[in-house]
Image (tube, rainbow, N blue to C red; front, side, top):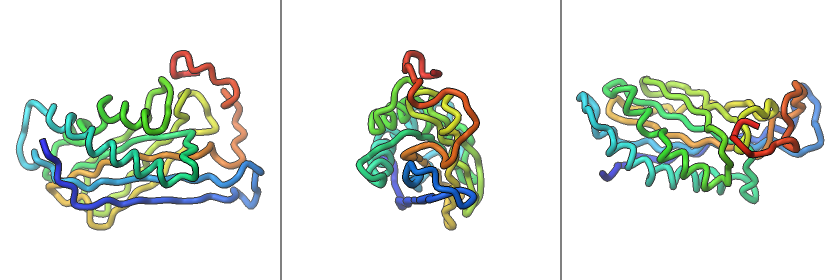
Length: 193
Protein backbone atom coordinates (compact mmCIF):
# COMPACT_ATOMS: atom_id res chain seq x y z
CA UNK A 1 0.00 0.00 0.00
CA UNK A 2 1.29 3.43 -0.91
CA UNK A 3 0.94 6.06 1.78
CA UNK A 4 0.43 9.66 0.69
CA UNK A 5 2.50 12.07 2.78
CA UNK A 6 1.03 15.59 2.88
CA UNK A 7 4.01 17.07 4.68
CA UNK A 8 7.08 16.48 6.80
CA UNK A 9 7.69 18.54 9.94
CA UNK A 10 10.79 18.68 12.12
CA UNK A 11 10.96 19.97 15.70
CA UNK A 12 14.31 20.58 17.34
CA UNK A 13 15.09 22.01 20.74
CA UNK A 14 18.44 22.61 22.38
CA UNK A 15 18.43 22.93 26.17
CA UNK A 16 21.54 24.59 27.63
CA UNK A 17 20.74 24.62 31.35
CA UNK A 18 18.07 23.89 33.92
CA UNK A 19 17.35 26.28 36.80
CA UNK A 20 20.31 28.33 35.59
CA UNK A 21 22.73 25.43 36.10
CA UNK A 22 24.76 23.81 33.33
CA UNK A 23 26.00 20.30 34.19
CA UNK A 24 29.04 20.53 31.89
CA UNK A 25 27.95 17.68 29.60
CA UNK A 26 26.86 19.88 26.71
CA UNK A 27 23.40 20.79 25.48
CA UNK A 28 20.45 18.41 25.46
CA UNK A 29 19.19 18.18 21.88
CA UNK A 30 15.72 16.74 21.34
CA UNK A 31 14.27 16.19 17.87
CA UNK A 32 10.87 15.02 16.67
CA UNK A 33 10.37 14.10 13.02
CA UNK A 34 6.74 14.06 11.88
CA UNK A 35 4.97 12.70 8.82
CA UNK A 36 1.41 13.86 8.17
CA UNK A 37 -0.19 11.18 6.04
CA UNK A 38 -3.53 10.34 4.45
CA UNK A 39 -5.44 7.71 6.41
CA UNK A 40 -6.63 5.17 3.82
CA UNK A 41 -9.11 3.71 6.32
CA UNK A 42 -10.68 6.95 7.59
CA UNK A 43 -14.41 6.71 8.06
CA UNK A 44 -14.62 2.94 7.93
CA UNK A 45 -14.00 -0.07 10.13
CA UNK A 46 -11.39 -2.38 8.62
CA UNK A 47 -10.55 -5.69 10.31
CA UNK A 48 -7.13 -6.25 8.75
CA UNK A 49 -4.75 -3.32 9.32
CA UNK A 50 -1.63 -5.13 8.13
CA UNK A 51 -1.39 -2.80 5.12
CA UNK A 52 -0.84 0.16 7.49
CA UNK A 53 1.76 -1.81 9.43
CA UNK A 54 3.60 -2.62 6.21
CA UNK A 55 3.37 0.99 4.98
CA UNK A 56 4.80 2.21 8.31
CA UNK A 57 8.16 0.75 7.31
CA UNK A 58 8.65 3.14 4.40
CA UNK A 59 7.43 6.21 6.27
CA UNK A 60 9.27 5.12 9.41
CA UNK A 61 12.54 4.77 7.54
CA UNK A 62 12.34 8.37 6.35
CA UNK A 63 11.19 9.65 9.76
CA UNK A 64 14.10 7.95 11.51
CA UNK A 65 16.59 9.15 8.91
CA UNK A 66 15.44 12.76 9.30
CA UNK A 67 15.48 12.61 13.10
CA UNK A 68 18.95 11.08 13.39
CA UNK A 69 20.39 13.47 10.78
CA UNK A 70 19.23 16.42 12.91
CA UNK A 71 21.42 15.51 15.88
CA UNK A 72 25.13 16.37 15.59
CA UNK A 73 27.16 13.33 14.56
CA UNK A 74 24.06 11.17 15.03
CA UNK A 75 24.91 10.71 18.73
CA UNK A 76 21.55 9.42 19.91
CA UNK A 77 21.08 8.09 23.45
CA UNK A 78 17.29 8.00 23.73
CA UNK A 79 14.23 7.68 21.56
CA UNK A 80 10.47 7.29 21.41
CA UNK A 81 7.59 7.13 18.95
CA UNK A 82 4.03 8.41 18.69
CA UNK A 83 1.04 8.64 16.40
CA UNK A 84 -2.16 10.67 16.26
CA UNK A 85 -5.23 9.72 14.24
CA UNK A 86 -7.67 12.34 12.98
CA UNK A 87 -11.28 12.34 14.13
CA UNK A 88 -12.55 10.17 11.24
CA UNK A 89 -10.10 7.41 12.11
CA UNK A 90 -9.89 4.53 14.54
CA UNK A 91 -7.26 4.57 17.31
CA UNK A 92 -6.08 1.22 15.97
CA UNK A 93 -4.95 3.05 12.82
CA UNK A 94 -2.51 5.08 14.93
CA UNK A 95 -1.31 2.00 16.80
CA UNK A 96 -0.75 0.14 13.52
CA UNK A 97 1.93 2.70 12.63
CA UNK A 98 3.91 2.02 15.81
CA UNK A 99 4.33 -1.76 15.83
CA UNK A 100 7.61 -3.67 15.77
CA UNK A 101 7.80 -3.07 12.00
CA UNK A 102 8.50 0.63 12.63
CA UNK A 103 10.26 0.02 15.95
CA UNK A 104 12.92 -2.17 14.36
CA UNK A 105 13.62 0.46 11.70
CA UNK A 106 13.95 3.22 14.30
CA UNK A 107 16.21 1.00 16.41
CA UNK A 108 18.39 0.30 13.35
CA UNK A 109 18.82 4.00 12.49
CA UNK A 110 19.61 4.91 16.10
CA UNK A 111 21.79 1.91 16.86
CA UNK A 112 19.60 0.90 19.79
CA UNK A 113 19.83 -2.32 21.72
CA UNK A 114 17.03 -4.54 22.99
CA UNK A 115 15.23 -1.86 25.01
CA UNK A 116 11.52 -1.39 24.56
CA UNK A 117 10.76 1.86 22.69
CA UNK A 118 8.38 4.14 24.59
CA UNK A 119 5.32 5.13 22.60
CA UNK A 120 1.96 6.88 22.81
CA UNK A 121 -1.10 7.24 20.57
CA UNK A 122 -4.21 9.39 20.64
CA UNK A 123 -7.09 10.70 18.53
CA UNK A 124 -7.52 14.41 17.96
CA UNK A 125 -8.32 17.44 15.86
CA UNK A 126 -5.81 19.69 14.08
CA UNK A 127 -3.45 21.39 16.50
CA UNK A 128 -3.67 18.75 19.21
CA UNK A 129 -0.50 18.36 21.28
CA UNK A 130 1.19 15.05 21.99
CA UNK A 131 4.06 14.41 24.40
CA UNK A 132 6.35 11.83 22.83
CA UNK A 133 8.06 9.85 25.61
CA UNK A 134 11.81 9.31 25.50
CA UNK A 135 13.85 6.56 27.19
CA UNK A 136 17.41 5.27 26.82
CA UNK A 137 17.97 3.32 23.62
CA UNK A 138 19.79 0.42 25.28
CA UNK A 139 18.17 0.05 28.70
CA UNK A 140 14.71 1.11 29.83
CA UNK A 141 15.62 1.65 33.51
CA UNK A 142 18.05 4.54 32.98
CA UNK A 143 16.13 7.25 34.89
CA UNK A 144 18.32 10.11 33.67
CA UNK A 145 16.86 9.62 30.18
CA UNK A 146 13.14 9.65 31.09
CA UNK A 147 11.94 12.69 29.18
CA UNK A 148 9.57 13.83 26.43
CA UNK A 149 9.25 16.24 23.55
CA UNK A 150 5.96 17.99 22.80
CA UNK A 151 4.74 18.05 19.21
CA UNK A 152 2.01 20.30 17.81
CA UNK A 153 1.26 20.73 14.11
CA UNK A 154 -1.34 23.52 13.76
CA UNK A 155 -3.11 22.10 10.69
CA UNK A 156 -2.83 18.38 11.45
CA UNK A 157 -4.15 15.85 11.68
CA UNK A 158 -7.13 16.60 9.48
CA UNK A 159 -10.06 14.19 10.10
CA UNK A 160 -8.81 11.81 7.39
CA UNK A 161 -5.13 11.95 8.34
CA UNK A 162 -2.59 10.34 10.62
CA UNK A 163 0.55 11.79 12.17
CA UNK A 164 3.50 9.45 12.68
CA UNK A 165 6.36 10.65 14.89
CA UNK A 166 9.91 9.53 15.65
CA UNK A 167 11.70 11.34 18.48
CA UNK A 168 15.34 11.20 19.57
CA UNK A 169 17.67 12.90 22.04
CA UNK A 170 21.44 13.03 22.36
CA UNK A 171 21.64 12.63 26.14
CA UNK A 172 19.68 12.47 29.36
CA UNK A 173 18.14 15.39 31.21
CA UNK A 174 20.44 18.21 32.28
CA UNK A 175 21.35 17.88 35.98
CA UNK A 176 19.62 14.49 36.30
CA UNK A 177 20.10 13.40 39.91
CA UNK A 178 17.49 10.81 40.83
CA UNK A 179 19.80 7.81 40.95
CA UNK A 180 18.96 4.49 39.39
CA UNK A 181 20.87 2.76 36.65
CA UNK A 182 23.55 4.97 35.07
CA UNK A 183 24.58 4.81 31.43
CA UNK A 184 27.95 3.33 32.43
CA UNK A 185 26.15 0.46 34.23
CA UNK A 186 24.10 -0.71 31.24
CA UNK A 187 24.68 -4.40 30.53
CA UNK A 188 22.45 -4.56 27.45
CA UNK A 189 21.40 -8.12 28.17
CA UNK A 190 17.63 -7.82 28.27
CA UNK A 191 16.78 -4.23 27.38
CA UNK A 192 15.87 -3.42 30.97
CA UNK A 193 19.33 -2.92 32.46
